Image (cartoon, rainbow, N blue to C red; front, top):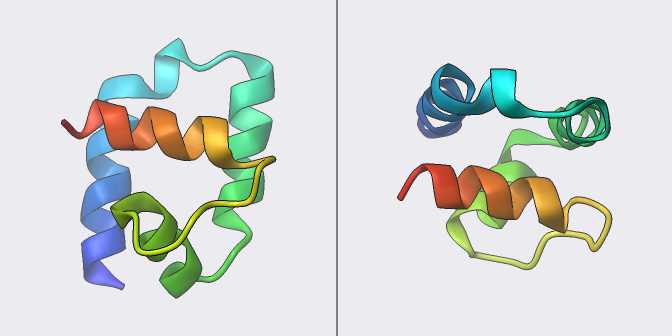
Length: 64
């Protein structure tokens, strides 16, 4: 899904190096979900699971 690719590329270019090990693991878990799920969570179309909420929030904040 191109829209998701663009969102994640922008986040990774700006914020990947600042993530700690737990945040990287959370990001890896996030990326194990389907593209439509991730896009809905990142755009606010549906709430992210509680375990993924911190990384989803961080990605959303980084994108402005």
